[in-house]
Image 1 (cartoon, rainbow, N blue to C red):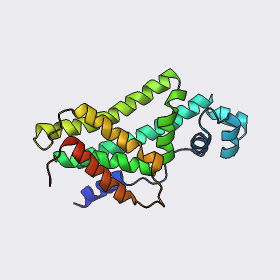
Image 2 (image 1 turned 45 degrees about the horizontal axis):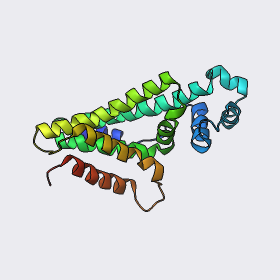
Image 3 (image 1 turned 120 degrees about the vertical axis):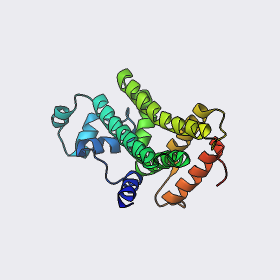
Image 4 (image 1 turned 180 degrees about the horizontal axis):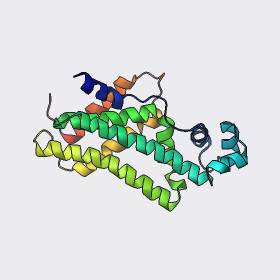
Length: 206
């Protein structure tokens, strides 16, 4: 039971991200000014580096964007898989864990999620393709959980793919409006979004 509780706590909690000081500076600049409004000099100054020093680590602004987005998506997928695994063979719990994890990620990593979502248009084709594949993998986890619930008779959803897309979009949007000092706590947001998600998949009343 202790081991299980520790695993559950791990996917529900997001501490300080693993970004380097350079990438964290870039994230701050991208979130504040947008990719096209950001310059290498702005990022370098925020990171406390010279422009040549920044280029020593990253060959271009595009490479910096790719590194920031890849790190965010990798963290999201790792946490979501842990959330799904934590449910074991409990179908409804698996679905709820995946949705909860996605909601918590977009509260804990608002800037990361915002940049990953809004700067797709700024990504080079190969970077965009990789990002879309990661996004699709996340959505597939939701869809798989819904289909499992349908197969078990616990969900009445007739369009799992569409429901998964809608739930993912709903959770992604949290990053654009949630504030830690706002009227809703993180747990409040999770509870509301789980209620929305259960309705979308036709979950039986508990």
